[in-house]
Length: 262
Image 1 (cartoon, rainbow, N blue to C red):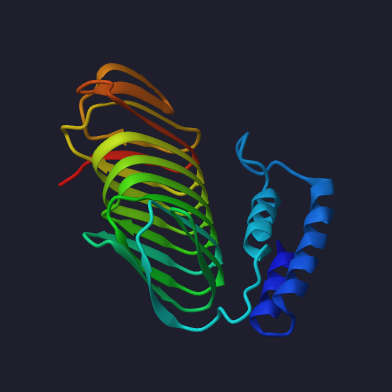
Image 2 (cartoon, rainbow, N blue to C red):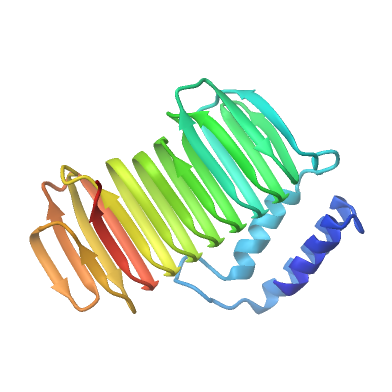
């Protein structure tokens, strides 16, 4: 991680080019692949695996002439894909047809069929987006806010806090560190795996879902009375109204709270 961040720092300072950075990162990745260690839960892989995968995806395209601060408008797509090394990201769904992007830093934006792709090395990004889209986010460092999106949201985050407001649809998230707070109006399904940090999910009392929560070293709390409840020290399972959807949360070293949305 230290070697990779040194390379990124040199790139940000303009001391090496994106192509030189890509070659150096590839060399670091090859070296680290020979001494993998499983830091997190089974299936997620090591921190270096995550970093290497994202580095390869981000540096596969040159960032030349993509470091200015500007505001861009792009025709609406069905899906937004974001991959970033550092910087905060804010996505707000609105009743609009186009994406309006405010970027500051080293950012690459392009389109592939019905997908808008954004890759960034550093810098904050704010996006006004159509409300009914799917979102896929992979981030190494930085906070994330997602508001008023109706669709499937997938997030892989290594470090940073995650906040979701006014969401509807399906959510899949894997987090290494940082707190997660989500507010859902309508739930089609939620799956969260977290290494550390607290997880708070706010839902309506009319939500229909089978809820299953586990935390190896944290407290579990649920505002709702559940049917067919199974409760142990670090485990809670039950049904809220009916098992129409599934809410699965596994948090290794943090608390989990299911709260009533106000």
